[in-house]
Length: 483
Ligand code: AMP
Ligand code: ZN
Image (cartoon, rainbow, N blue to C red; front, side):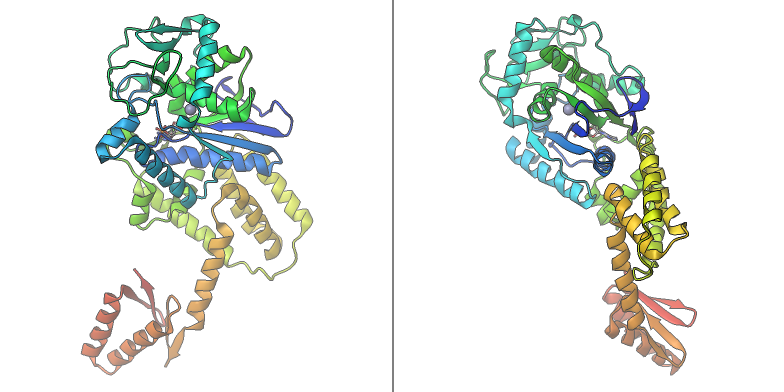
């Protein structure tokens, strides 16, 4: 596979420390609020990447943290802990907030067909690991104590900015909230490894440490959790592009200083989901969630389809118009798959392998998901039988996870039900969603109209309307749907 590596600034062949095995780490959510669909764009693309690697034959160990402590309002270690902010907003404890939004996050993931990583570790569960890393960093002279906190000394490194090809706007994220400088820092980019003192004394969660009672900085969590579950050599680290600086830059600084050797081979950054007025973010107050999309009648998987249509290294603009286009394309695709006949022919092994190779190659070109979706259309157009087509679509969907076969089967059943219950009287045919009682009422309305009994016809129409059923006139009759 060829994958763009933010650390080397080029697309390169993906290689792992141990052949055939991928140690993969993902920055998980900060669980002080619902994930917005921008956050979920990152998780969708990372999910496709993980599934692609498995599909290509790798054994993957995927680890994710849950940030339930230490992520301050500014990524540059100032402001209030986001968790505390969430707890205050909802008059709950930090742990209640963490549990509630962790569950909500995985519920969103379930709706979007995002697989749960092999290891999910809340940051509060690995305090001893962070203390061990900070202790060694102090021993080796990479860290110092000032004003009660422990800081990493970035002047000790020859090469601190690893991802310097990112947009200025992304790099500036750490200072986005106009926060004041921390005067304990020796250098502008030094960052907190362990807090004991900060201007908000009411931090809810605190632990004993050699430097006093306190709590870990946000960056140390990811290094500690990854080293615990992925080992000393990480192959692939993922996150949204705003995490590149300072978060990932600081992870590299502390991990490599601690280990004394290179740490992570490959950095995968997903670019932002923007609204027409800029990056979608929680600090702006208004943000879209999966539940909100559902309330508006959208299938969460249509949002997944929308994300797959564009490349992860390009900013994606969200608008309802764009989403509606994705819904139409997704439904059309499902309709075409539903029209295939599973009984037609036997799977042709040569054709199957040929298309599978092509899919592997296209997706293996820097995770080209839009080509991955196009591959499904190519299969539909292929000169082969329907059994082979369905086998290929099911195979590709192990990576795309759009529930293509399940949705097509459901549509087939629905269409068959509607067809079976279709009523025809005197050339007038009623179809619908497969309820004979409703079909009969629509037919009675037609007969009432024919007999010029308009009051009765209107009564039936109103009765159906009250039940949430809409009648649509068609060429030779009518159809109905639940709205
Ligand atoms: P957080 O819960 O704030 O720690 O963020 C969770 C993940 O979402 C991180 O990998 C972020 O980089 C990513 N992220 C945040 N905002 C966006 C956005 N608008 N589009 C895509 N990814 C984002
Ligand atoms: Zn992280």
